[in-house]
Image (cartoon, rainbow, N blue to C red; front, side, top):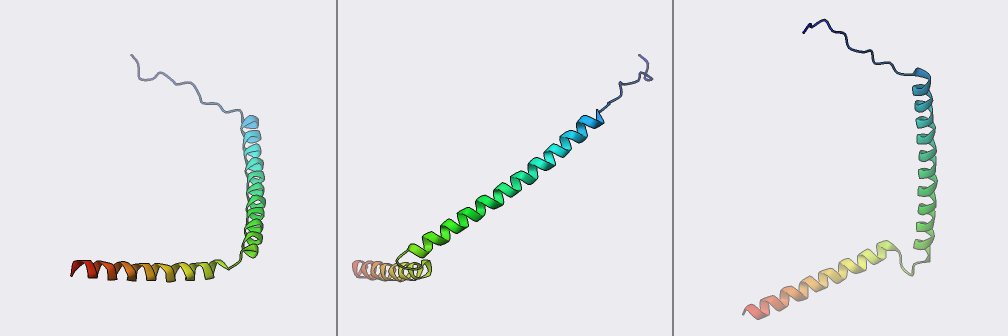
Length: 84
């Protein structure tokens, strides 16, 4: 066998490739616009939902943190009383 055998050339249809790249870019930008519009709609819906709540999320978090502290304190007290 001879090492001088040539391999076939890899030829790409440039017009087809450029058309594909253009369509990919257009599709990406359309997807990006759709994602931005969807995120805006979800954000607005979340803000309306939060406005309709009886108490703000920060108040809920403070109340839950207080409940957690009370539960930990009660559990600790019960554990200490049982171990004596």
